[in-house]
Length: 386
Image (cartoon, rainbow, N blue to C red; front, side, top):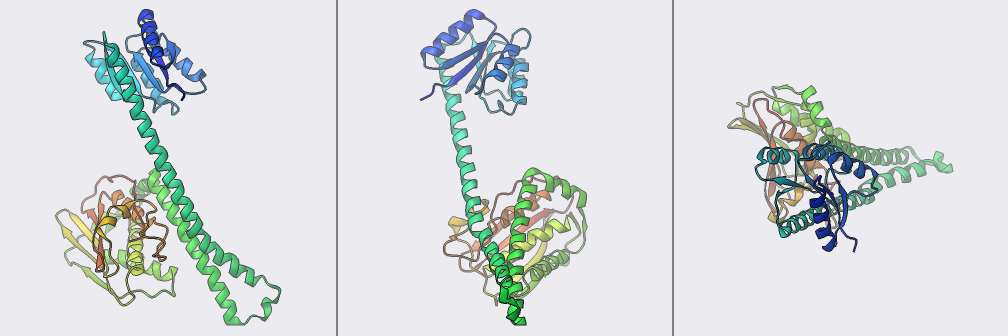
């Protein structure tokens, strides 16, 4: 197993040599520097960054606080655990270091065991965070591969297969109705592929903050809530004209006032929620679209009488790409709808909630402030299927 590599920065040569000797006896690989300026130069020259940095604060040329600032500016070093060595009474330096994100302090004169424990605990914590990040990235990669394998391959198969039929030498002998069937197959695959790509783009825009900038440019006063629902339904009908739409019942309270929002983002959010309600309900079961005021928020909801969600799935469905029993329920999408819905609600300074009983139905409620508010954030983790 490779030794952890530590960088020690200390202008007191005797203390520096003493700390180096102790840590090397404990099995650490040590690099030393006598001030922050030298340490910055060493960091730039080393092919692999150290696993942890220990630095004095009071040093010539570049003190420890400025050294920490320079380290945190570089993306290569921003996650390296950083421990300060400080003399007693340097409370102002301690406060400054905490604001800069230092991980720990060792007060001089210090006990060797205190130093070793501080180093070990910070290295273990850093490893745990790194492992968690690696696992999270691996899960995202695995989910993306699953999506690519199923959700992208299916519409591409439609497009390629029907296009191949149209490219056959004897295609002229095909009747008009059969030709239309081929073209509908190509169109169906293309529309599904387009929606998948749009969902991924929407997620990226929410994660990067681009959607927040768009929201602030487009937000307006919205007078008629029902228009949002109608525009979402219109899009769903145009996107899939052959799919039947459940009976729609509007439950918009007459006292709902105007509020600030982005009509296009809200159309997208309710398109996902209504689409889910249609997917997971029998065609004869009604879907309720409504709005009411509670306190200083307007509540816009989509209620179905469909499959419902079990209590064990309530939290999981908000995870990106999560789908309930994909192997059994083949009517699900990419698992991007609910993170998009939640992200859009947060752009408006609001939130989204779920009430559901398995076998009886689900109600998704988007809660938006009646007065303009700062967005809660742009990161929405969730799922497009329920």
